Structure formats: C-alpha cells, structure tokens
Length: 509
Image (cartoon, rainbow, N blue to C red; front, side):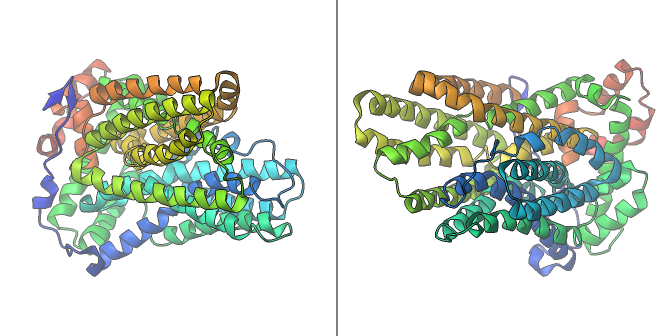
C-alpha cells in the first residue's frame, strides 16, 4: 500500500522462515547471548550522551559550582567532529572509531574533574564533545549491522532510548552531591562521565566488527565466519547465515557501483539517495524543533513562579522527568518494532501538536493573567508533551536514519544527521532565550507551525521499515534490480555485476 509514493506496509519477515541454528530464546543461545551482551554494553554510547547532556543543568544548580563555563553544551566539540568521524569509521572500521571516541571521553572526564578555572573547564567540554562525536557516529551502525535479523529492529530502536538512563544517573548523582559542601560536589559528577565510555570499551572486547564493513574491505571469509559464529553458533552452511551473507555481498556490490568517487555526490546521484538525504536532514531538524528545546527552557522558571524554588525539589522534579522520559522512550522502542515506524511518527507528532497548543494557551493565560493554576497546569502538560515526544522522536531519532541508509552512506548519513542535531541544538541554546525575552509565549507559535508541517513531511516522505532486513530496506528506496540497473546506466556505470546477484535481489524485492 502506497501513500503519495511512500511504502506504508511492513516487510514480509522472510528470514523468519529460514532454518537457523539458534535458540528462539537468545539467553539460552551461546552465540546470541555473547552478541547481545556486547550490543547491550555498546548502548552505553547513548547513555554517555544522556549523562553529558543532563550534566550541566545539574552542575549549574549546585551552590558549590562557583563558576559558569562559557558554553555549557558540548555542541562546539561535537558538531564539527561527526563528519570526519564518519570517514574514520568507514576507513578503519566501526569498532576502532568507537574505541578512539571512548578513550577521548574518559581522558576528558578525568581532566574535567581535576580542572581549575572556567576556560580550562571549557576546553575539557570541547574534548568531551570530540570523543562523543567519534563514539556516537560509529556505535549505532555497528550495533545495527551485527545484530541478528530477529533482533535488529529492537536493537536499532532501543539504542537512543537508553539516552535517558544516562540522564537519570547524572540527575541522581548531582542530587546526591547537592549537600557535599566542597568542590567535590561538582567534581564527582564530572569524574563519573568516564563510567559509560568505560562500559563501552568493555563492550568492544565482546562485540565483533561489522560483517558489512568487512565485506566492503574484501574480507568476505572473515565476515562469513562472524555471521556463522554469532548468528548460527558456528554453522557456516546455516540457511539464514547464507541468506544474510548473499544479501550483504549483493548489496555491497551494488553500493560500490552506485557510489561516486566523491562520497557526498552519492547522496544526490539517485532518487533513492536524495530521499535518504532529505530524511537524514529533516529528522535531525525535527528532533530539535518539535518544541522540546523551548519546553525544557520553560520548566525552570515555571517551577520558580509556582513556588517550587528549593534546589532539592527542583532537582527531584528533574530526576522524575528523566525517569518519565526513559519509561516512555522504552515503550516507544518496543512499539516501533510491533506496530511500525510510520504510525509512531504520526501519533507522536499529532499528540505533541495538541499538547503544545494547550501549553501555549496556558502560558498565555499565566503571562497575561498571572494565574498560578495555569502555571501548575503547564507543568503537567509538559510531562504529557515529553511522553508524546519520547514514543517516537527519542527511539527513532537514530534508528530511522541508520535503517534507511545503505552501507556505503550509513556512517556519513548518520554523521550528517548528528551534525544537524547538534547545530540546531546549539542554535536553540542561544536564540531561544533571546526570542523568549522579546516576544515571550508568542514565540511558541513557531513550534506549533513546525509540528503541523512535520505531519505532512512524515506522511509523504517517511516509508515503513518494520519487518525488513537492512538490504530489503534499500529496495524500498532504490527499487528492484531493474530500477537499480537503470540508475547505474544513467550514471554511466555497468550493471553486469547486479545481474550476477539478481536471484538474491529478486528474493529481497
């Protein structure tokens, strides 16, 4: 079924019909147990991002933190790092890129805890952003590319949902050190930033390199044995392993044929690639301009105005909000695999639009009439708004771009998506306060317009990816082998190689 040229139905889950030498319950299967433990430890990349994103709000609430760094966000370090990190991940491998990022983050955390002075602190924040840029660019593709097909969807959507668990730890630690009456009240949370990168390094000791990356480097035999070890307990002739391996080889050959000598030109070389580029950019913009940034800014002053001025109470409410977010994000990750991506995108956006309109109206009443009950109601609707945001925009913010991108564009496309995320976040950090101080609640109408436009963007541009392997998703964008051959001919390339893999590709289609 197609709406406006967009695939709205789920895949056939054909891989589930193939014989596979694994236990349906992965905890009882040696190969899957080792693989999924490694993947779970790699989720700490998202937790590190959440810890870091929540840290400065907690630190600035500590009376013992006597200096305000010139820029509380990591955007300055992270934003210019993602694209160079994508080249590193494609050239040296996903695992190496994650390892470098984790080591940089651990060094930055130790240096930050030992630093004196605002500019030295600022320097360690940039260093932390660089490390996060490397880890966050490679970890999502790695976990998605090594996951068993039965678990791939759940792994991909769960990754970013772990973000809030890092934020919870950060909020809890800063709440716990609130009554430490010396500099360790802020040094301890800074030092604990090394926790999640350390867990990530432990995960790297377990998780294998991406089979897709190995095939792209001409190491097909190694890729086959990794698939066999982790997806079939060492059975190289397993039907599912052979299906996966043939899919990957076929897709990598086509990727090489479609890829331009200039990697970024590949994003505009075919209609499917251009659509993917638009999705990567729009998702990066949407997750920052859905109103969540402005709502977060409004939480602190509204708590003050309704009489909640005690730092401990405010920190407790912040912790409660992070737990609320984590619960709904986890629910969204589960629902995305059960009901599909498109329904979640649509439901989340419509609910956010409804709640944001109500927040705007209540904010106007509070600002114009000074009715405290309206301010209290805003806090309640903030929780409802964030819950709506979390069911799709948190789990799918990383998962969806990673899913829709083919191997040869995956690292670079994700780096572009993350660059947009951090750049728009950086913009929000400095522009939103100016706009709010100038026109107050009227600025909310900008976000109402954004949310309304997002509904049409999702309906006409975002295809369903549920129930498909990564290679099957590529067919949704690029078409069956005949359409791929047409793209190759238009590019002046040869389609002889796709003919060799036509049986596999026709099976995918």
